[in-house]
Image (cartoon, rainbow, N blue to C red; front, side, top):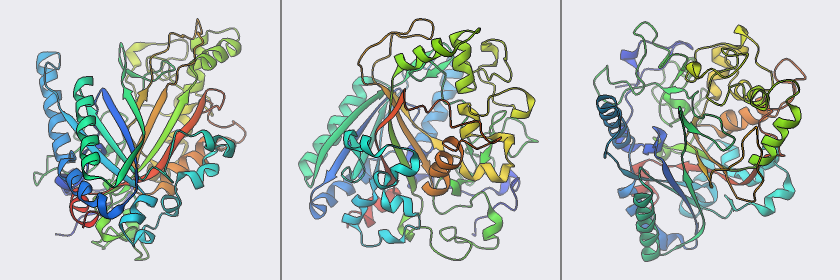
Length: 463
């Protein structure tokens, strides 16, 4: 049966949303949501020798079907008990750089996204990176051909699975481990935080589509039946083709009447056929200097508090409350509030949440084509520094930024180039994203990767 695509930015009713092949899509697209995650990076030395390991990884990867089922059960148990109890799981996903795929396939040129084919290292200046810093990157996609993500609810379980993966690759041969990062969630009173102290992950788009033949089995539940284009209050619902190859995308009018979502409006392939059910994965290792950030808040606070100076930079208070809702001070009652527009109140034009998600500064159809599914996690020990009392140390800490999409050029790079780093967007002259200041956030690694489907791992990349 041909998949139904959106006829407009609003799209059709939920009962005609596309059915995703959940057992063939890697699970972190849905979101692992684990407190402990390890990123392992490998260089492929001998493609022929390494192919059997890829097939075995394909048998072990956690699928979207598995992850969604567990996450639903976890929420059900937590809501009933008031706590999560002993329910836990351990998962693994994989992704390849274009250089890595080129060692396994001769059709990498069929990926239409030139940014992916070139890799992050060669595209780093377009992201605002300084060329001289690349030499100090811990990991980069021109040498790290394979990234493996291991995630678990308990640190010991994550470590055990990491050793299973390493043993598999050591036994099979053909690849060498070149870097490892261990991430762990930073817990706060109201949810997960990042190292500067702000609640993170509040404004994520919802994924449209169904997980089964049941027309009510929606990937993202609707908060109200009369709002088919919203999940939780303030959460946009984005068509799955923006994040996974082979499904309707946000601007379905380009493809109206077409059943093949692997092609663009002119009939050209977006990616090779075997890439169906796969996603691009952008990785950025962002080192955060917490002391410098907090020291700057002290220096720029003026007559207000350091916390208020930070809120102006981020657009939210530390609790997550948007400054539009709480202009005079942090109000935790608004911590999860995501249902607001920038027209409602004062939010600096260069505040982080406004630069990377312009909301009503643009029409829906203009901004929703550039959304990302963010799946990152902090790394490094929690700092003792606070905005009121900055503390200096030399620890390596920051964010392992991960995001899924189907166009690196039109999603991640567009957000960075046209919005975040563009001093004239929006309301000309407001400056670049105030949070992404090189004094306190420095990229120390990264890459553009492709997370193939389970069938591609078992067949196309291992044969």
